[in-house]
Image (cartoon, rainbow, N blue to C red; front, side, top):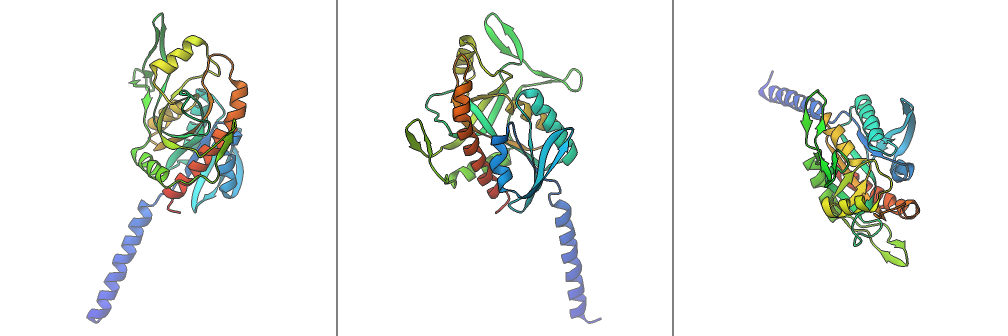
Length: 280
């Protein structure tokens, strides 16, 4: 065998080994995309290529391709328990490489306009711990396993957060928001959200959320998602649009008015983020 043939043969072997190592390091699972209610996931499902609907423990999901990558989309329903249940079941079944949340949250500050979008960099529970005469004393998450205490504060995967923040710099909304006689583009920035199983609140709880937690949004699922993904060692990130302005009393009508706006804006930015993440 000539030296030239030997060189070409060895080069081919090196190339095949490199391809093999690349395949071994390639992502093998889908991206799991979650939202609480149908209108939060509708734009994502519409953007998928030929989504196939299925069920897992009576939980509906859609599996398909998005920007050339495999994704699974599912609805958790509202509440911490539903979020933990669905996220845990979907992670166990599909072993995703990452988990992405897109949804809404009540605005805590009046300067946050309906449809402004937050990339969540910190989330905690506002109703875990001890309710004392002096107010809520937030305590640790207990277990599993037995006796393990975890601080009830969760942060997204740093790399996903970095990509999302860079995606925000290049994001151009498709159309302005038009509501309450105003016309404006959404704003996308980093922020925080508190989680708890409360639809409406009284004046005492309103003041606690506004004055004690110093948060941007108020909702029911994000900290639960963070807890599940942290425990199951899955990178995660949450993107939330501001809906109704938090208030004491029933905010159902405001949520129904502003919720769809917030859901659409969060989903549209989530799609942009995913296109950047997937290298589209």
